[in-house]
Length: 284
Image (cartoon, rainbow, N blue to C red; front, side, top):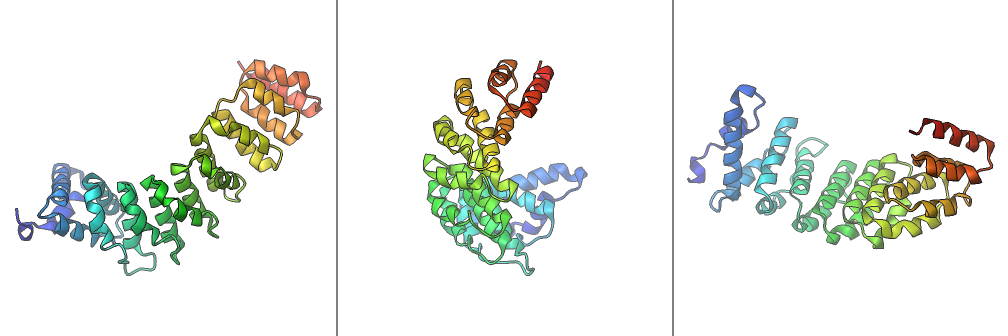
């Protein structure tokens, strides 16, 4: 099949239609565009055509194109990258945002260099999209670029940077992730929690040593420790050393009577004693 004989507009219209009665045509057109995007002869033409549609305002069209490119996979990256600096005519740069989104959905270390060009873009939406895409690349090669977004003045951009870091984090990144635990934006804190939980049990002692620095950080550290299945004796060993505000956070994470009974034996704060008694009555 020669490219000049393909009606790309017709295929695109069918592949992105929302009309249920044309579902078979939609699936057929979708599959054909994927095949053409992988074909040696037609790939460049097909990908160039689809990328030219990236400035569409239609949410369904954007999602369908994302799905097409995910199916094409890595062979599509070079074709998108050749056009990645093209922006739509509106101030939100729809085309560039779509490019970054699609590259992230494809993933692969191959996207790191082209996507990293946009981590300092003047538009925060572009910075956020670039950092999210870098996270989806799941490559340590992206780390120097991701780190640059951790202190962005825009909270959504910081969230994207911490999300990206959580995808590739190792013990070497503890300092960055711990800093995120008391960020002013809750989504940053939860992204940092995910990164720390994913690193695993090896960080538990380091986290325990940080308890008591601030109530906000304590809360998230305790959430992490709860997910890491810290031994009961380790929790009992430091519960007496922290403030009442921190102790109640610890008590809230425990769901068995044996643990709560152990806390009752050492707790001297009247309010917390009543809290423990009430919780014991509620626990099966």
